[in-house]
Image 1 (cartoon, each protein chain N blue to C red):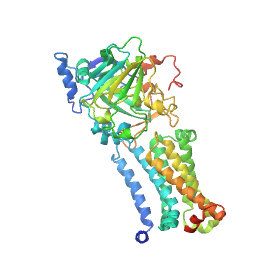
Image 2: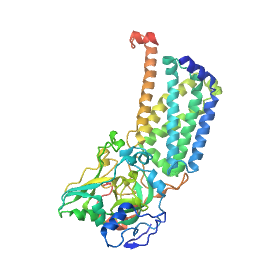
Image 3: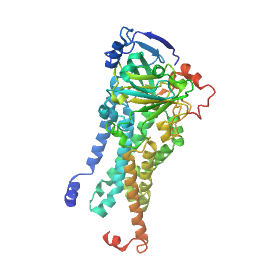
Image 4: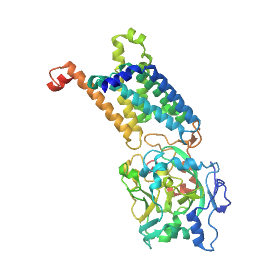
Length: 302
Length: 211
C-alpha cells in the first residue's frame, strides 16, 4: 500500500469513461476568463492500486439518510433536491462572513480530479474519481481568523425536497465537523463532480465534503452552511450514538466499531464472490495525515 | 370471507411452499451471482435470507392464534414454514460466513464478541434440532418430548428478532414491526398458558367466554 501523493497536475488517468466538462466546472473555467483551463486536470493522491468503481455503482449505492435509509433510496428520491441556484453561507470566525454563490466560488477555485478510496464505517469501500476543489481554498475566500480551531459543515435542511427528514433517525440537519488542520489539509476536498459529471443528488449535489482518511459519514453532502468556530462542533452520528461514532472517525483497522471489526472491508462492485481487502490505517493516506494525530490516543479519540 | 380463505388454503398443497421457497432462495442467489442485485450482492442475499426466515417464523407463531381468534386454518403449512425458515437461517448464516466474513477464525472471534451475533448464533444452534425433528417419524418416536423440544420456537423467534434489531444502525421499521408482532404473539401464548393453569384467577370472564 505504499503510495505517493504528488501535488502536481497530470494528464487524466481515470476519466476515460467519457469525460464531459461538467457544466459548473465549464462555467468556472469560463468565468476564470483567460485563466488556465482548470478542468480535466488530475491530482494524484492515492494508493497506487486504486481501480475506480463504475459510475453506476457510485450513483446507486449510497448512504444519504435525508432520502431514505436503504442504499438504493437516495438514487430513487434525491432528484427532488433543487441544486440550482446554490449558495454556501459561511459564518463564525471568518473575516468575510456571508452567503457565497456556488458559481462565484467555482470561478475562484481550481477544480481538480482526485481518485480516492471511500471507506464507509460499515466496513465497505469503493473507489471514486471525484472532481472538486480544496476546502482550504473555500475557507481562504472567507478568510479564517487565526484564532479559529474547528469547522462545522451542514447539509441542506429541506423537508419538502428531502423525504427522509420526516424520519427522525438523526437530529437534522446533518452536521459534520473537522479540526482546522484537517479542514486545511490539501487532501480535504469539496467535491462537485464524479467522472467529470455534475454530482447527482444521491452523491451530495451540488457540493459535498470528501475527507478520504476518515470514515464516509464525516463527508457531509449537499453543504449549504459552514461555521468556523473555536469549540468542537456537534456532529450528527456522534450525537446519535457517541460510543459507536467518534468525532475524529479516522479509518483505523485496529479500533473496532462496537458491532463489527474494522480490520477489513467488503469491496463494493466486485460481484457476489468479491474478496475482502484488509483496511489500511488512515485508509492508505497515513503518510499524508498521520502527523496530524501525533501523540493522540486513537483508541479513545476514535 | 374467512370460509373462502380457508377453502383457498385447503386447495394449496403444503409442498408448494417447499417448492416456492426453495426456487426463490436459489433464484435469488443466482440472480445476485449474475450481478443483478446491485453493487453489494452478498449483503443483499444475506439480509434477505435472514429477513424472510424471520417472517416465516413469525407467521408460524401466528398460525394457532389465527385459528383460535380469527378462524383461519393454516395448520398444515406450519411444518413447511418451520423447515423453510430453518433452511433460510442456514443460508443466511452461510452467506455471512463464506461471502461476507470469509474466514472461520474471524467469524468465531466475532460470534463471541458482538451482541447481535450472540443472539443470532444461539438462534441458529437452537433451530437445528428442530429442523432435524420436523418429520412424522420424530413426532411419533419422541411423543411428549417433541412438543417440549419444539416449544424452543418461543425462544428462537425473539432471539432472532432481537438479533435483527441490534444489527441495524438505526431502528428499521421492518425490524421494529417484526419485534412488535413477536412480542404480541408470545404475550398471547403466555396469557393462554396462564389462563389454562388458573382458569379462575386471571382473565376477566368476558374474555373467557369469547375464546
